[in-house]
Length: 347
Picture 1: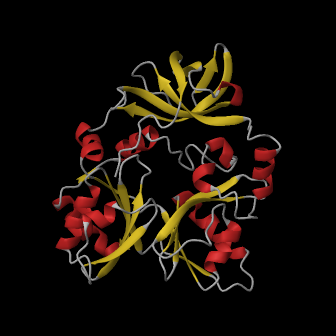
Picture 2: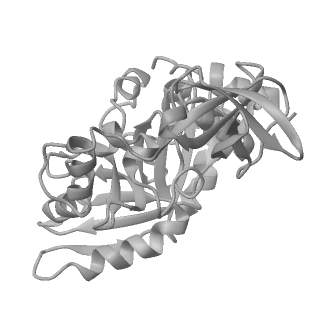
């Protein structure tokens, strides 16, 4: 059975957990045409974003396959794209090559901009407390109520020791949380302030367990360059079906309207009937027929069993479908279930 610190997991479920996400990529878009340009290139409605709002989006090939997924955060003076580290260079290169006469300039902020995440029911209180201690807001005190009222991907700006901090509401782990962007040289001190205010630093295994419990697929793990967003089930979060054209839009529309949304495979939750944690790549079977494979797996302390995300052929994607997982020569009984495994904690 996979093991990690119960105290760290409990911090995320009942208190406030802290993790450094600075390995991710951060790209800035500036210029008067930046929103219109990104609107034409990405799957979601970027043009309607206003300062302090954001969305989740994907960048697709003309064939509807994923190049990357990202957070798109409109900050007023710039638009910030938060991407997986593995896709940073390709996103920057591909977006730059289609800029012609538009007033858009892209730059890589990754080297100088840190990213922290604080997550848990007490995240807003801890963040407000840490910010106050560092002289968080120049005009008015930073309040936990203001932070807690933010919708997912909405943001507030404050200052810490003279450095700007962008705080973005995030629910990827199934609990209230915030992604925090600030100058790298001030990040250690801000992390110390968060810990002093009650945040508990957690390891990546705990963060992954929370993500899988929340049923949120991760690019490079549960999605890749061969994935169509409809297969991963991210269309309701990532795609605007009223915005008009974007690369891959014709493929998505054809699948939805002509194919009634039927794709060859679907990402599903798999509940294991035991404590053995399967591995990515383990085959999923229905009887003796191979129907798919595991993409990520963990131990769920809340459910007290192993759980997994994986792709199965569409005829086997219905919740309640009996399956088994081939792991290290064993066949582990399992059942396809609805996502998320664990429902979201209210903010």
